[in-house]
Length: 422
Image (cartoon, rainbow, N blue to C red):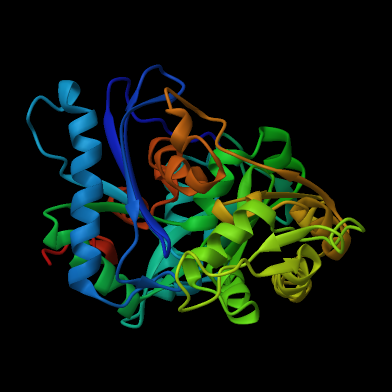
């Protein structure tokens, strides 16, 4: 199915709330293909967020404000003094769940239209409405007409019965409401939500990867989330509550050093794979509580790698187990793209290949123009992808499907939480 694009000149903003940083991109669409230029960027070390979830509203709100202000200031010429009002926000994978549904509608021999497709999607959405979770994505995967399957876009075709396999993603209400509250206190409205790994995939994958089957693994500070793409669509997403901060924490404990020093050692000398040089190479590990002038404490680099490797291996093994349990089989594809702030650890690609037994490459955002170098790396994949999502995939947003489904339907009576005044 062709996706709709937002019009040329439209201003859009993305807010990526993570465990280690909060980032905001303000972008403008520069052509009819939905290509963006980024005009404003803000990012700030995160506070009040743990394991992808807000644990301190005041702290989170303060960081969101600072981040958004920085992006607004950078885009001041275009914003002409108007504050940012609407943002698309990431939903951490730990607060989301994937569901597969099949929806059938009668088409009674007439030509299948947009409306028939929306009718099928809306019918499925009605089945998952609940007070406990919110619907985030409604993604049609495969259509069948009178039992013939493998149809990607049924519009213009004829038949009696149409059924569609749908990938729905829901978000847990509690974490969502806390996030909405922190954002709303910053005087912003959420126009859409997008699962973090979906954003990362939209930013980093080339079209062939999305078509032929590929898993994007987004390794963040508090969460590692992943999404499987096939046929140009996301067909599955999940997450595990372990990220780069857990590796840093292991190092701090294992080498009795501070979190700051552990983070620095990880970045400078860390690796996911042991090499035969590690024994002979010594690194200086500052000890907890000692002043700067204490005698250097040299340990072999192999000690550091020996702490990191099992933890990273565990992450890949948990991802592999979830992919095996997903029932997707061959649809998962042969490729993996690693992205996110923690994907820059040396040797990660090789360890990923070893554990997952797939071709692995490192990914960073490829679809945006004008990104300053400082924010063009893998740590900003999700942020960049949120802009792509809102410009190109609005037809997968439950509220849009609902608004355009037949008038007089159940949707007119259902107030959707994004539209409610918090």
